[in-house]
Amino acid sequence: MNIRKISIGSDHGGFEYKDVIKNFLTNEGYEVIDEGTYSKESCDYPEIAKQVAKKVSTGEVSRGILICGSGIGMSIAANKVKGIRAALCSETTSARLSREHNNSNVLCMGQRLIGETMAVEIVKVWLNTEFSGGRHQNRIDMIE
Ligand code: RB5
Image (cartoon, rainbow, N blue to C red):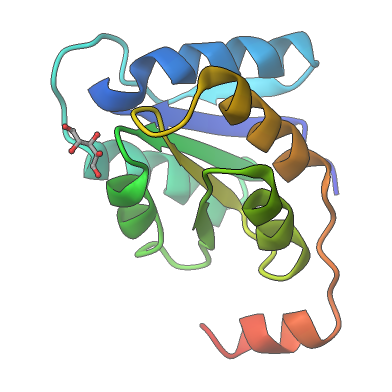
């Protein structure tokens, strides 16, 4: 799967990591669509989550990354959008498993809960792990 196009978003609680990850992805050659927020001013995470999730859902981009303070609000909101399998990850094993077993298409993280280096490592693992398919696909089919 060509995952060169990624939509990214955060609220004020994830603003700094959004920029860090955006720079990382751009340096790696990904095309990044930044859905905001664009300042540290307080804003509402559900709006950003929906914007990113809809782009993934329609196929405009192949993956989405969302960051808020805890990652929880973003993951709850993103998972309301049809076809979205958003995984909230705080370490790399969950990121890997969310790809292998759940074919996650949106990654959520909490800036207030994990270090910057860990956030980038999670992104690397998440982007470079393939879905295992097989019995896992059958289970995903049962979700929708
Ligand atoms: C904002 O203060 C905070 O609630 C938000 O970033 C997020 O953690 C929500 O789940």
